Length: 568
Image 1 (tube, rainbow, N blue to C red):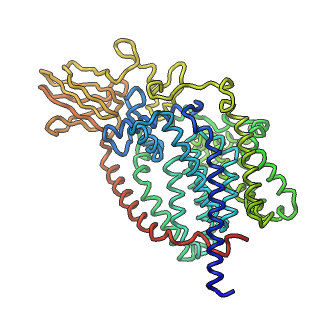
Image 2 (cartoon, rainbow, N blue to C red):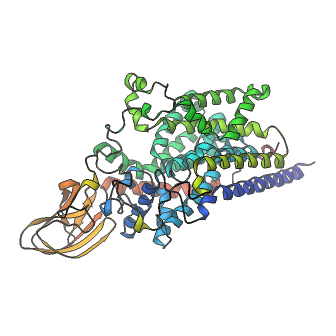
Image 3 (cartoon, rainbow, N blue to C red):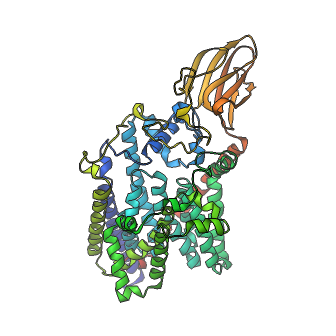
């Protein structure tokens, strides 16, 4: 066979593999998102919080605020800094659907269908780069999607879920870059994966950053190679500049404002959220029962047991599982190890489990593919294993999907029924509200919870308009006065009169915004403009995005791996 014929044959194999495994993943994803084919969904854990974020972005966008740093729906429209303190880039999709008129529940369901397929794509690409084999990449992505950990976050933990499935892309690209200079071309996949995680979940980003640093130290010899070193430096530079638009405001407000989320009184130790062995077992060790059985099988078989990398990964995973157990000495570590006092900021030990799980599933998927060379046998078996896994998870976690009488459903199909603050009967996380404020307990002069119509002043107000966190009103006063408006005050707000003159805004009673109003008849316009430093960061990230896209377009024709590694 001459070289031309061989190259043509490899291209056919390449295309055939992509078609088969892509179709398999699409079919599995279509089955996986079954619950979201309805406009009904289960309300549990963080769902009301995320729906508030969607409505908050929608209200702010309608008010002309972009990016939507202060969400204009929460707390009866008084606004919170959710857009600064919690990455919400992907939530702009359901927010835009809401603006286009889609019902709240439908927007939520479409968003989760998008997240599931995004997760499959990023995991598939990541594992494929990691293994340099389409088949192994697809099977590992199937197993990751079918894991109990993925299902645990499904439908509720928007940030955790998306970040979890982007981890293979980061680890796969990073490991290959450090392995050989010929893989330095994957630096842009590392940037994409890291940016997805950064723009969806801060806690995962912090843990990942520590792990990346540790991996670089362990592979410091690779950094002596100028090509590999350049790839890592490019990844770091583009990742930093692409995300500085979010990182700078986050760092500023996290440092200067005491929120509920970073109030040290709320979290004293990770030990508070540890569990017993029975609970870990009932969670199917976060792998899913069929995948866990595969793990045990590979540990028993002599041939697979000799794989040192597999054994190291299993050991690391066993350690992070143990870290969730009651016997793990979190309190001692927090009190005696340098930097231990920072650990409670991670909220609960379960945060560490995905980092061990990704490596274990990578090796389970790879070893599973080595059993046979027949892709149809491997594909159908892996597909069946994952179907069984998610069926077990469905039955265990969400009986409401099978019998609506087994679990309560709250009707949040429309925003009119969606609470925007915590009451005695409903909990909506107020994480990014001032730590000394409990909105429900605040009362106006009528002893009612403050509404978006509550202004406090001795001036006469008229022509009042409010959209999100943007206010416009006119007033008449025969003396200099002040006006309390229905917004919480945060640095970055600005107020101007009809002539464009700036008016002083500041924090008043209950952290509500107050505006200095000179005597006479004037029109006041209030909006969240952000600090000047934030605007500079926005421009830097936007310019970096354009440059990165130009580079990416030029790099896309590069194959993920050579034809000869496609099917073995």
